[in-house]
Image (cartoon, rainbow, N blue to C red):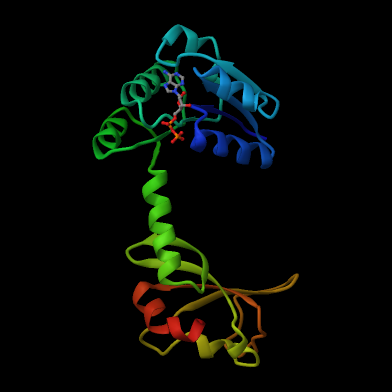
Length: 217
Ligand code: ADP
């Protein structure tokens, strides 16, 4: 179990807190809006109503011992930056922060934030990708146009060998695993006969995914 602090309990911060609690971690939630803190107080491991631009108030929360602190303040640029600065001064090792603009991102980088997230943009990209490739349940972008995708085997693939969805020599996908109910075939053979509703995890270039897309539908 790790210990996290979420600063800013707006929609994004509140959701991140609840998910971390679900995953079995301890979460300290902080906001200067008493109503938001009260609404989550019963779920959170610890909660505090505090203005995080006030270094003294922030120090009292003893956040230096947290495994990571997520600054989930987006709109108020000054509050986000001051809070990060104070956390740095307090020796917090792992700081993640939400950014709402390019400028915000640039300053957070300069302040040494470990990871900067852009939830709206990232979600927008994911939704567009899903609309573009409705057969892809989920994906992981590896960079340089390489992806890992999770797809369900359609009815038309029932009885077909795995190799029929992997493409030709030039534009081919790599099958990482096939999951059939509680059975998992890791690094499956090309000859594996697919069943409708098998879950396929494939890796490949965007080019290969595009050229093979209709076979996956
Ligand atoms: P969201 O889109 O997730 O609601 P916001 O940026 O609007 O994101 O919300 C940020 C949260 O951070 C709000 O709940 C706000 O009350 C809180 N917040 C803003 N400034 C401070 C501050 N100085 N101290 C503590 N909490 C703050």
